[in-house]
Image 1 (spheres, rainbow, N blue to C red):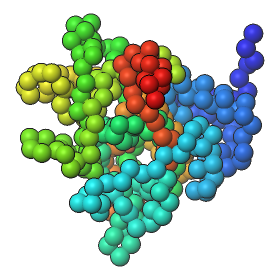
Image 2 (image 1 turned 30 degrees about the vertical axis):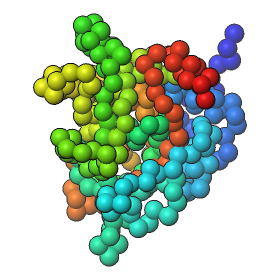
Image 3 (image 1 turned 45 degrees about the vertical axis):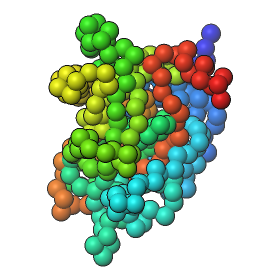
Length: 301
Ligand SMILES: [Fe+2]
């Protein structure tokens, strides 16, 4: 019989997310605790720890228990000023902030709302996990919305699932927060990749919808009009309130999520107020529609 979990937690919404209670993430946690956190993560997609006091080094240390820390993806030269803030000194850390020093942004993706997206979904190997720590918050808004993409996939009609099986979609990003990329011309200089519309999570074995409004822009193998219609249905499935958990930040919140089965977005906040969150990630690998493809592709390496 399995040992009972020692980690205590409580659900945050019917869609996804649990709050884990009674842990200090600045300490070095026993391996069994890390294993239990990972098991809860696999099941609940988004984990929240409240009232944490954690330095950048401690955050990286904790995150590294779950895999190889991710580096920020280097943007093309032309887009550098949108993402390379002046206080981002560690390649593994992104400061999600609207704050500036002498008119220069300290971090990335500063103000206002941000459409749903998958962190680095536009790359060949999207980050597996993201960890975000609340350092400075506006008095209201700037909430993070998480869409459970297992439930989004399951909500699609059998007809749509059949139609989009084995199809790929273009994910592309120009470091905008709430605008699509113009893909009518040459996109070779804009970061992009093609992923299956449906992916199987390599650990849970569950199918997930891998599409988001900000970065997924074109379904292959159909006309532009048809792609637009299909995408709107898929965006709506992931953004349906019944599959979404909305996180209202409190100072000291530490939130971690799985990018392979969640999209996330941000609600508006007053640009006159400051917001600063410290982000790090875990490197990922290619994503496949069928579980068997993971092992096949590993063998080819
Ligand atoms: Fe993000």
